Length: 214
Image (tube, rainbow, N blue to C red):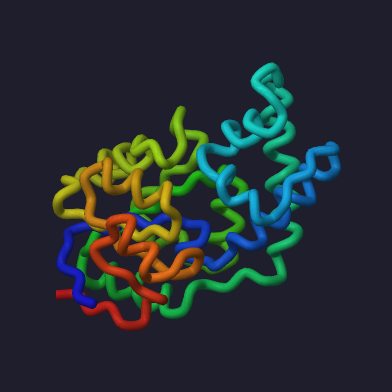
């Protein structure tokens, strides 16, 4: 695959790390502690939006803002505990980020993760310095599939969407990036090549090992 854009914006979970199964398992175990039972096969349909939006989805709209925040932090702590011994970048990520840097291609991160989870992943991979701009879920009012997080990241990078490509693993993320005006590269950590193409990806990759910058 050849890349000739001026900027690239990565999602984090499922895109630079293959961690979605750990997120799902931690949600299911966390919710079970509060008597909320959800089957693994039914979880993916609920897995979208900001952390606050998800907590409200499961615990109810009457949950206080303070309690939503408290529950969100507890869930992310459970996820980090579960995943901490398994952190590993998607194959070829660091060399690809180095190549982007050498070619002066602006690099952003647009993730629904909260600050502690962003630091947990980027610190664990030692790649934080490769991203010029990082936008997390607490900076937006609506999560993916709303395009707000991508629009905000484009603004921070000071680039036009038509010269920027997004890398995404989820259907909500693909929709958000497309609605922000970007071309999308899908990565097959969570969905198949066929599913990603059917949802509008311009290209699909399995990892970052065979991307040529032109």
